[in-house]
Amino acid sequence: MAITIDIDNRQDALTITETSVKLIRQAIAFCYQMENYPDHYQVSLSFVDNEEIHDLNRKYRGKDEPTDVLSFPVDSDSPEVDEKLLGDIVISTEKIIEQTEEYGHSVNREMIYLLVHSILHLMGYDHKDEENKKIMRRKEEQVMEAMNLTE
Image 1 (tube, one colour):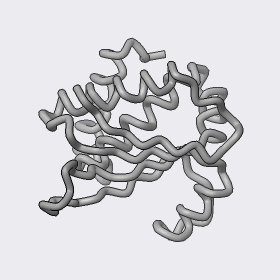
Image 2: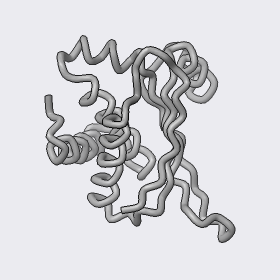
Image 3: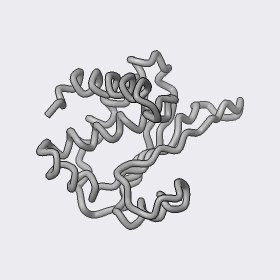
């Protein structure tokens, strides 16, 4: 599978290792397979600090607080574009660390959970009501179990 992912690391709270990148690619591949997406969809992933995600959350969602992850879907079906753009994901590494401590699981588990959650948003899933929330959670759990990252 030839997944294209652009990773932009604009923070220094967490080291993004080769293992991290492999897990990221694997999680995206599982999501694509689960949803029957072709692998030529491109994803942009930015790791940022709480200050930057706070600014983005205020600007794009009107919420004056840092959040753990933001998803920005892109609908690019232009014939000039070789790859379809699924969207942009922004993750706060400070929130990864905070939530790892809060929930008592690994940094990799939290990072991949936020990524999978966001990929599903880019694919059109949401959790605005209880029925959709259950569907989305079930799909998140499928990927996390497939990757053996349930704790």
